[in-house]
Image (cartoon, rainbow, N blue to C red; front, side, top):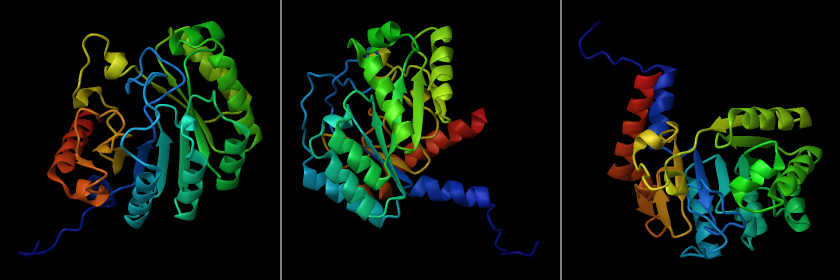
Length: 276
């Protein structure tokens, strides 16, 4: 090879570098309030949390605009329980008008009122549901709200009928038989995307000894992700709340350019590469 020749990176290397530096998807944690009190919640959400924190509606619109301008293609509206936010429908419309190719609502499915359903259909919003068991009593013992299983299942049925994108995430907190039965149940209903996760030792999932380090993360957090919390702090992902990398006031672009995010992503990327 001639001296000074430039060696072209592989497509995989170029993709990895783009994700390490850029913004592929953003999660907007609209509220810390939730109508359920799941025993393992990483975000410590509950009905006792305030509906609004530091982020105003205009702040959320600004986050959407900044993310769109940076080429972000996916926005995830999360909580808490995002459906309790009074202006959720307006944010969905704004995301659609800004050109986001993928808009997802992460929900427990117990609070999907008619106006919100109509907006989701009009904007083509996908829904990601949380489910814990096939037995209503087991599921409700995890959410600590009686009847939550029935309402979640009703929303899953509606989403399938409305032909919206749907995925169901099952956290392995019940026993194996319940987890497998829950997966079989929703697949039989027509849900093709079913994912599984362990309980992360973060928030209530950590009990008396939470582990606030990268080993508790899923390993995909380096892939161009960011999360803006309801108090305006920017984190690398929804689970990495122990590592602020910026603020909504400073802006998304500043967080992406900061050394804290870069170091985090490189650490998680290296860890993932060692595992694979």
